[in-house]
Image (cartoon, rainbow, N blue to C red; front, side):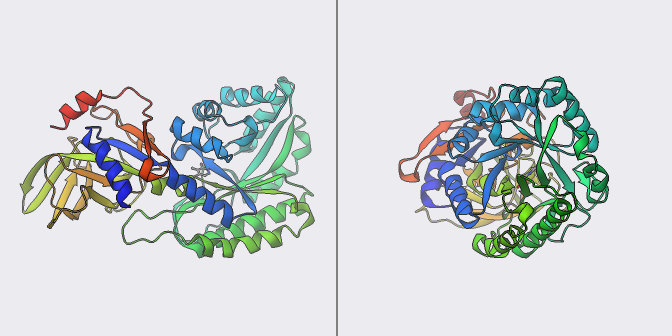
Length: 428
Ligand SMILES: *Cc1c(COP(=O)(O)O)cnc(C)c1O
């Protein structure tokens, strides 16, 4: 975190707006630009579920990337943020009939259509039926669940029994029937079998599995996919001892594979899509919380904050991690202070033992009223947290636009939260 970001966080905190999330859009924009440049043979698609904030989506829509949605609610968000149906893919293992009917309906008006990523044969049949009934032809992709996933990924969806995609072993029986679905147009394949990986080699190995399957099935069934979606699985550091992916190294491992894939005539014109969420927005977001109480317990200095697992489930290690590890954390204050460090147990305000933000965290001395920022919080933060648990007000969200020295800080909260006056009272 640089000094300018620090002073923006300080001013938000000093206005009594904690707990809140702060997203630095300039940082997100730079990441997108860097990625687009390094992976010039791909287009970029943003997974809305990683951070569905509407104001953030609007800013992303202006940058001309596509989005992947996984519910009717995310469809509403994407459309009202300015994404055209042709920029949207719809994935997810449990799409409901009314959600599919809505995307088919969008396609009826002529113009470009939402692409549906089908995750089972049953879903293809339903989409075909709906499409026929509504007199249109829907573009669809088939999500493949591969038999193998390289090691090195923190999260895996493929390589085992799962609700995601059609097992590679079952794909023949589905592709043999492609011509039977008369109201659909096959647009290509989708794969996303694992995520949150910090090893360039493992990601590259996973891409070779994707490419092998895309090639094998396209060749066997003489398909010319218009699109190949690569669920990228790029990870971000969640601990101070982890280092970020080296984008250039990653591109040098992956791009040549795409080039050789494109030498196959059937795949030569396929649009390759890099689909990712946390990598684009995660590192640019901070969760800001104030210390509201302090005490000692059995030799440990305890600091209790106004936001905890109800606001940020993932930072409490409750979103899939096996062992709870501390996330990157800073005390936000004026830079030029002399400080002594101490070790703290940092918790949220909830009456539950799982509400722990940090254990044995070394930070400059902390007292009531001080601000703590938790990094890597731009993805899977607010909307992945049980905000109604124990009935505290929902945290606010702020979007920081423009260069940091003349940044504009916008309140982009979407739900009724406590008024700033109530919040600043609450932090006393
Ligand atoms: C969630 C999701 C992503 C994004 O995953 P990240 O780990 O945030 O990059 C990509 N594709 C699909 C289909 C998803 O469901």
